[in-house]
Each structure stands twice: as C-alpha cells, then as structure tokens.
Image (cartoon, rainbow, N blue to C red; front, side, top):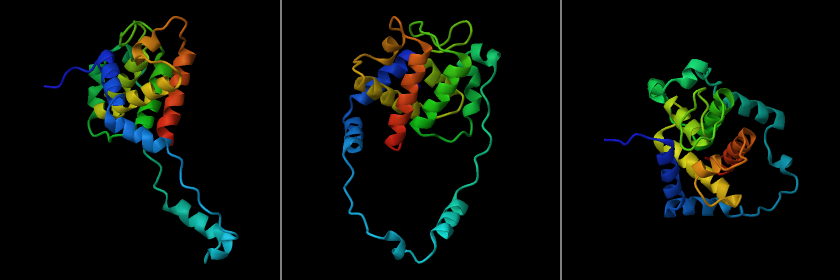
Length: 197
C-alpha cells in the first residue's frame, strides 16, 4: 500500500534523493565542462545544401504543437482537497522535472503562495512550495518520482544558495515572500532544464 504523499513527505524524500550516490553522479556529470572543440574554418563550404533549405527542413521536422493544456481549476478548485483532482492524472504522460516545476509555478501564481508550516493549502487555496509541487502532480503533471526529482533539484538550488535545511523550513522562514518562492522555482527550473531534466 502506497503512503499518502504530503508536503512533509515530499520534502524528506527529495532530501533522501539529494543525498544518494545516484544523484551525486547526475550532478557530477552535469558540472563537468564540455569538451573543447576545434572550430572549423569555413563550415559553410562543407554543406551540400544551402543553409536556408537546412533550416526549412529542420522546421518541417518539428513535431506538431501539443494539444492545448487544461487550465488550472478556478478558485473553487484551489480550495478543494487535492485528492479530488487525481482523476486528471489518468492517461497523462510523465513530464520532466523542469516541466513539473513550471506547472507548480502556475499553481503558485494562480492560486497563491502561503507559508504556514506544512499546510497544503490555506482557506483561500494558496499553497506552499511543496504543496504546489504536490498539487501539480495531482493535477496530472508528472509522476510521484518526477515530483521527488523536482524536489531534489529544488534542494540542489537551495544548497547552491547556502541553505542547508529542507524546502519546508525555507518556505516558512521569517521574511520570506511569494516573490522569493517564485524566484526559487524559476531558478530551479533553469537548473534542471540546463541539465536536460
């Protein structure tokens, strides 16, 4: 039987992932400098087709635009228990952690941010940072392992800023604002995306 995922559990599982050897290997490979390549003198003479044609062929090969995403449920959806949104996960493909974090950012911006200790939502439906990641998961944007990896990326970002605690204590630290939370999520999205995740 699977345990009920709470913001506190997400916070601890992300910390366990961050401390694992597999995570250190991932981050270690990401931190390595790419090999230096020698620049070709006049690369255009190596082409057998004009550059314009290559660009046009590449653009034609792109996949079609994804279908329109379901918008977040409105204010009523924000205050409902997240378990009522789990039906949205049915048939949803898994996403990368950076995409999951972008959906969590949408939850924070549209439903609001709050810093009550490990409260999934306040009476208005605002979420803490971990609560936003959990809501994004329950809305069908990423599996539980993806959500945990997103949390580990967030802890990695916090470590780079000198914070050694978990996400929850960072979220409720005195003086913390919604702008701080959004800036953290944005920086984490960039960090994970740069690593291809």
